[in-house]
View (cartoon, rainbow, N blue to C red):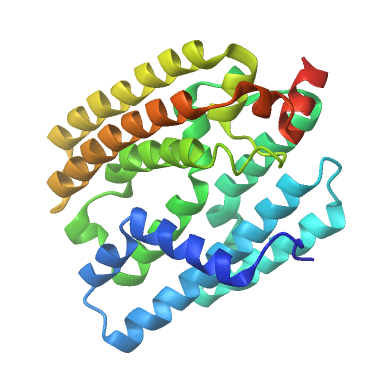
Amino acid sequence: MIENHITKSELDKKIIQLFEYRLFPELIRLGQPSEKEFNGCWQNLLSLQASIYYLDAHLEAHWNTDNEVLEWHWNHMIQHLALFGIAQSESQKYLNHIKKYEKHELELRKGKMPMRLDMEYFYYYKSCDVKLLRRLIYETYNLSSTCGSLAEWRYYDLITEVNDDVDDLMEDLDFYNGNRFLLSILTKGKLNTKNEFDVFIHNIKSKAEERVKQARGKYKDYIYKMTVQRVGETLLHMDKRLQELNLDELHNSKIGKVVFVNQ
């Protein structure tokens, strides 16, 4: 059921990079686990994230998805969610954002592009896996009492998800992937895309500044500081990507051909 283009060693590397970029190691350490507990939690998070990526790999590899394969992946995720003590009857409450993400990806097949959606709404659901794993870390170590609400991470998650789309631009060309940055370039052009993303990214920074004033968590200033840092990194990364971009390569890609057929 796992797609042929997935290599376990490369996937493990990708997941660890994701975890480090999302500051998961620091967050787990705040729970003061023993080394054995840390390693156990880390391995469970790795396994759950891999099961989510396997679902995503099927969605991005097949225009005509297989419902039986999708169901297998959902059951696989539920099994790995159980590692955190989540009963199957409760799994829907934890996985509903991933279901919304899957819906957005499947709607590409109907010609429904992500650009029709509000950007903050779209990236909120696109960061569904990160929010799920952070929620599990919070619940495992009862971090809400010291770190405040999970909502304090909202703008950090948004900017890092935008950065992922920018970073994955070339990688996503030959897959059916709802990379909004890529799809926007294909449909609106480089300049309009740059302008739209510039406004959105600066808006993330402004909202993060307002959020930190109201936040109560012990690490609110650190979260804000890292959000601002990611904003700067993403703006630079986006400009570099756009300068290097070969539009012919985009238009001739698998996703490019699909986009223009559905326009």
